[in-house]
Image (cartoon, rainbow, N blue to C red; front, side, top):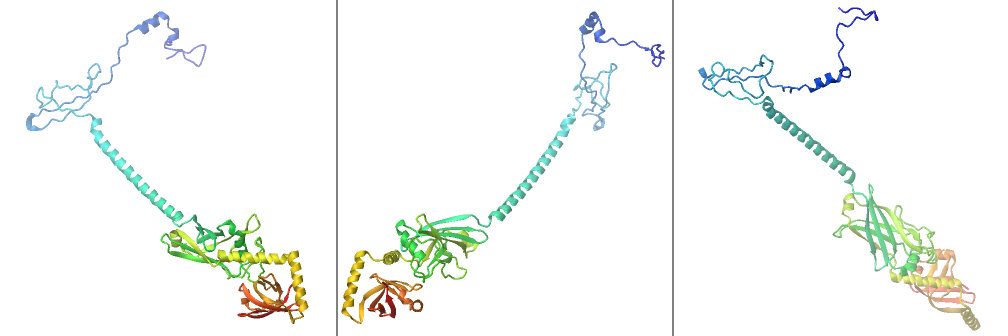
Length: 411
């Protein structure tokens, strides 16, 4: 037992010597300790012996191998890999080589490789299934979002050599086939005639769209009307988009006027839907249009008439006014029942105003009630007439195919 320490009542005296730490060891003792040769520590070796039977053992039965751990008196095991055959075994012939067993790790390797191969096969199978599912989903999404045609298609411009019109058609699918059509003159020199025909058409005008496939077969079509009012008087070619709306069929698409920088009608546009199916839209490759728009020759004639009307509205020049006075004086001197008689042709008949313009630059005024009930053939220009006016400027206009129209000579 340890004795109590007088310095510390609760402590016992040490019954053992305190170890000397390296920093307290003298240098001479430390050198002696460090100079001692160190013996290599033997590595651990297997302590198993393999005892087997020779092939010529009695009875032909092998003696079971006795795998037992044994150590020598010194506690050291025999070297690993060496087989002790000096002791022999019961029934084993002296000097016979015992069977050598493979290491346990080698026996387990084929099974492990087989398990790894099976695991890899399962991984590849799962990856294949996942890939097929992803591919199927991608195809389904693609069909859902892109199976229905969409986007805008520019079918390009077309020009008619008869009317001089150039059309440009765009189409797109958005639950139904939508279109946007622009019509304008194909040549800038035809701008004035085009603007006059659009602003003051002599008849209701239509333009029909024809959608065709790559072989030229028609898929669907639609007619679009120009706003028109045959009763309106002629207006200058530079009239703007405030022209009065015409009478068109209910629900029919109509064109809207587009004004150019010079104030003239530069183009007409329309947009709406075409009565075409999805299949027709997918097959659409080209298009054309048909129209009863005035030909280039008619546009030139209408433009010439318009210029004559504008000149007459401005009044004659001083020389023309003097000549007319001389003719009127001679006619009055004759004291005939009719002071004026001759042949002429009507080139414009404004029914709303009751004003008739002739090729000979004469102006006849018709009562509005009479004008409203006049035969429409009086507007089938030019209308050849024979006129007779008395000294009070009351006139009769006669056409062989239409009849007689009473009017007064304008001054």
